[in-house]
Structures are given as C-alpha cells and as structure tokens.
Amino acid sequence: MNSVQKKINYQFRKVIRRLPGIVIQWVPKPNPEVVEGCGVRGKVGELCRGSSHVLLVTDSTLYRLGFHHAIVASLQEEHIDCSVFNEIDSEPDSDVVEAGRKVAKDHQVDCIVALGGGSVMDASKMIAASFAKPHRSVRSLLHKFLFVPGKTMPLITIPTTAGTGAEHTVGAV
Image (cartoon, rainbow, N blue to C red; front, side, top):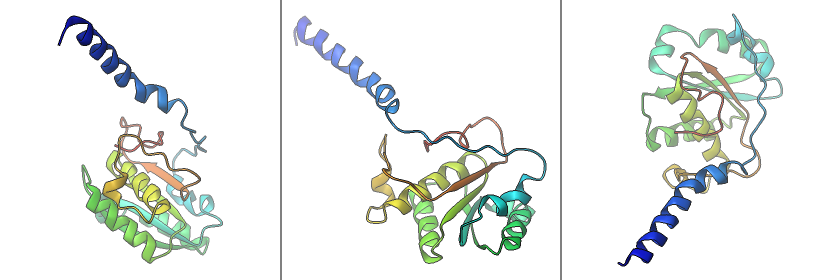
C-alpha cells in the first residue's frame, strides 16, 4: 500500500469514527418529566394513570429488601395491575432482556417502571424497545445504534444509584 492509499485509508477511518457522534445528533430525544424527592416511589401510581398493567423491573437484591412495596401499593391505589420482573443482574445479557420481554408480553403490560441501578435502567430500555419490535429477537436489536421509530411504551425510572446517568438517556449499554 503506497503512502497516498494509506492517507486515504486513515482519513476514511477518521470519518467513520466520528459518524456515531454525527448520527446521534439527528436522533429525536424525549423530554422527560422529572419527579424527585423523598417518597417518590409512592407517587408511581399517579404517574402511571391511564395504564392498565405495569411491569416493575428490578434486581433480586432490591426485591428481597422490599424496595418495591411502596411502588406496588401506589399502583394498587390507582387500580393498576402490576407484574414484577426481578431477574436483572449486573451486566444483563440478551437472554435476560428476552425473558423480560416475554413477561411483558404475557401480561400485556402498557408501561414499565425500572427500580435499580444502571443495569436495571438499561435492561428496561431494551425491554421497552424490543416490545416495540416483537418480530425481531433481542440479540438482533443489539446494534451500535438502534433507532426505534414511533413510541415505545412509557418508561418510568427510579434510580437507586448515582453516577451511571442511565435514567437520563435514551441509550442502553
């Protein structure tokens, strides 16, 4: 390969590396409603008004500690059914997301509530996105940039950790 070809190859790779940053600017981003403060888990029912069945996604530790009780009670006060999917672990894989999507489909949920850290948040986003594309496997959805046209089901995130920022972005890692 001569020096001209090397330079062209280098410039091409340089443009390709910048492409994701350029593309992401064109992706529509939602403007989330932020509710914060002590007792926010008890307000989830109000936020889910209009929904008939909610999927609460969390991890086994938070579930075992009972952090979900205030959310479930809040939903019951609003006469909203709730199913719990607590199989999220750190670094969840596509099989976990597929299992969450199956629970969502089996119970015909129309809203997702994520209670946990970054792994729970990201898995919940993928469950919502994959629910919007039921004809595709979760594994096939895990591309670098997957654009889901239209709306996914509503997603309410309740972070229990700080630092990941997963509750603020539309992206899932």
